[in-house]
Image (cartoon, rainbow, N blue to C red; front, side, top):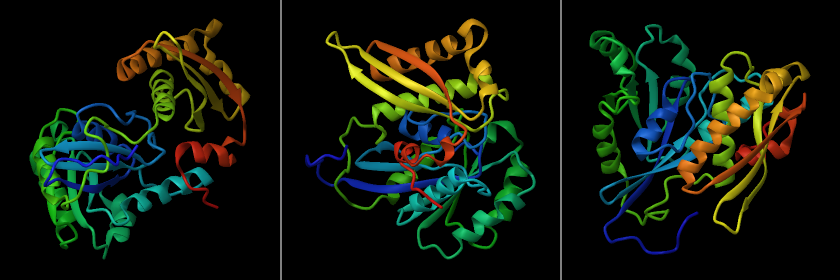
Length: 305
């Protein structure tokens, strides 16, 4: 939550929108810039749904990072809401980072994104990611192709996974932040509520453990988040799937898969929250969950027709 307490003198604070195609490494980069996990990471495309804010500190600068959903051609209501969240996150930002997977040789998939960036007044920075997985020459060719028309003010080559080049990027972002009071307390790393963070951690495990078995049309909803007298927290969540045939996939034999998902999520949450976590999961089938306005509100997404 924003604070009314005055920060130290001579501080800087600004917003950086992190955009790009699915699987470009945006969430991994946000986590690296913040210095700890604030956004879930998965090999599954379109993992990020809400526009989550990560909060990074660099000297006197507080850098508010909008980790946006990946940009893609929207087909469903949820898709449209996610793409809307990207451009809303970019509006009035002090800088826009376009994160590009440096391994990809064909760049035509970026044309709609580049078209939307054309003429925007925000400072635009091109970030070629995954330098640890590709030779330098193809990355330079890609950078020249993308930045050749003067669309970008600066170009950085990084590996969000290994941290290569991240410190230099963070230093530059801090330099770009305008003089301002900090918007958040010094020890806050995200604007996401603990309820939403807990759901995101469970959803990450859902994708991680089920891989391609479970389609993208699933979500995790909060039911209750109750601190106990002993200092621990009791969390109840609902895993929502679109078809009854998916229920067995999530449950596993004798409920073994659901137990494994819950145990992994519980351990990670306990580490992040610093308290003992009691996590209870159950599965619900709802073919029309993608049209449930309440779910959009939980994700912080606008109801887009």
